[in-house]
Image (cartoon, rainbow, N blue to C red; front, side, top):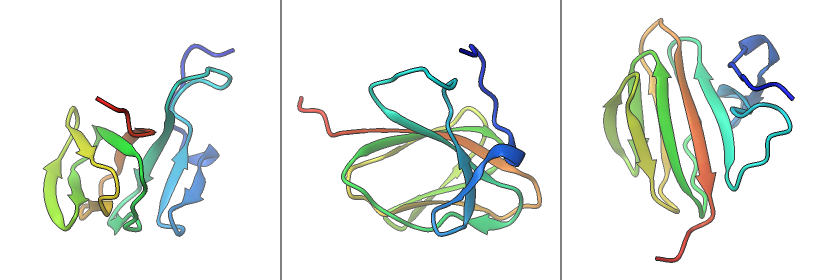
Length: 112
């Protein structure tokens, strides 16, 4: 098992209606109690807006853009974390020529 995992656009798959590239975040074979994926926009573009009955966070690693949650745009950049509540329509927008990379983690709703 590898102990390091890096995003590689050449190995990523088209996702969210063919609007972004995505691949697993954690090293191959590592089990976790949540799902995960890298999200990547190479230049101007927008991830297909979508929703699901899960909690989710995006951790932005490279570039600058916007997290859009239920129609509200939040400016994001490296080190920013966006929380997406269950059933919220959400997307990521890149308006620049620079690449935008984020790690997404989602899990079933936890009772408090």
